[in-house]
Image 1 (cartoon, one colour):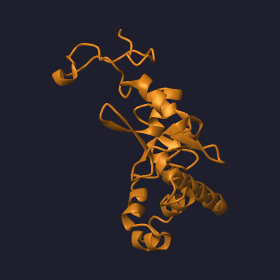
Image 2 (cartoon, helix red, strand yellow):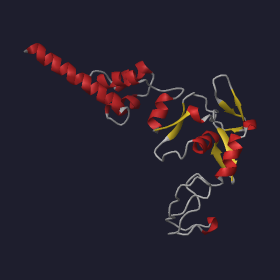
Image 3 (cartoon, rainbow, N blue to C red):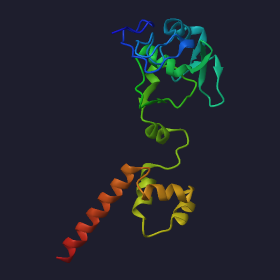
Image 4 (cartoon, one colour):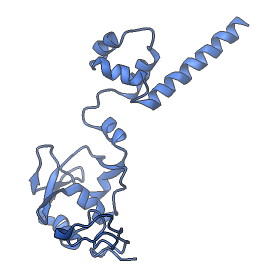
Length: 196
C-alpha cells in the first residue's frame, strides 16, 4: 500500500496503464489519489482569507477567477479546478465518484464547506436554481398518462413533450412515477371496495 503524497493518508490506486510523460507505470502505485495532486499548496491557497469574502448568509464568496457558469476557479499545475470542490475535499474528504457537489445556499461562488453537500446529479438538478419541474408536477404528469397527450401536458407545464414522455417511460423522475402508480393502485382498490 502506498499513501497519497498530498498528505491525506489515504491509499493510492494501482495504475492500469502507463503514462511515461506523467511518470506513471502500469502495475505500480500512483503517487496521488484522483484529484489530490499538489493538495497541500492548493488547500492553503483556497483557505487563504484573502481569496474569499464572507457575506451576510455565511457564504464564503470566492474572489478569484469565476467561470462563465458562476463557479469559482483555481489553477493547479496548469489545470483549472472548481474552488468549491477543492474546498470540500480539503475540509471534508474526497467526493464520491457517483456524486456532485450541491450548493445548499444556491450561491455558485460559495466555497464554505458547510454549504456544500455531495449528492447524485439527479438531486442536484432538482434542487437547482431553475428546476424544470417540481416533484408534484412530475407526479401529475405520471398520473395523466393515457388521459392526456404529451404535447398538451408539455404546453400546460412549460416543458417539452419529450420531458413528459420520459417520465411516462420511467427514464426520469422514477420516484414520481412510482408515487403516481401507488396513487393509481390505491384508487383502483377504493373503486373495487365501492363495487363490493
